[in-house]
Length: 250
Image 1 (cartoon, rainbow, N blue to C red):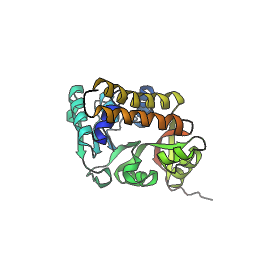
Image 2 (image 1 turned 90 degrees about the vertical axis):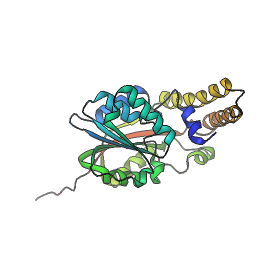
Image 3 (image 1 turned 90 degrees about the horizontal axis):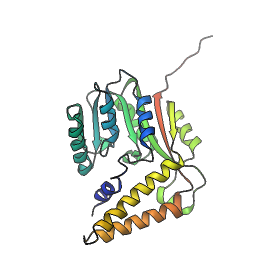
């Protein structure tokens, strides 16, 4: 079974592929999309959950999503059809880093997919190229909430702490206008949902040759979380606007 198939199963009960509950997702979208904002782009959209929720709440909104997973995009198209918003959403099957658009966007989203660009600042550089004047970026990034163990570093690599993460964003020319740090409840709910969904699938398909592989993956990932990074991993969402060049007169 491929990695994207395993990911699809893991997120069956948690379609937002980040440690955020529905209330937090709704609040972030409400903050990121003041009335009058009409064009939204998600770079690394997966199953386009952010776009689908935005489209469902804003009848004048038009959205575009970019992702390398045809499995995820097929699921997104099906969901858009069921919601009746398919005419207002365009999905592109390609590398997000290579995407080019003819028109700018009022909101650019990248939550939990900065790896597609090689990190936080390269992701913001890509978002800036697609952003309309006065537009906003909604970005989600991991950070170390406490000193990580060697096992945590092995799982996620070198992350900054919360303050350093925000400082890097500000130094890059952005002003945070809102933020959300995932709670312990959100972090735990996400992990339990992912590895529980995998385990349930494996048990329900015990006769399937892939069942043993999926159960092994669920067991290994749950153990890595509980013994490795649960006590140190954090997740931050920021809504950003570009910082203007300001001059002061005497």
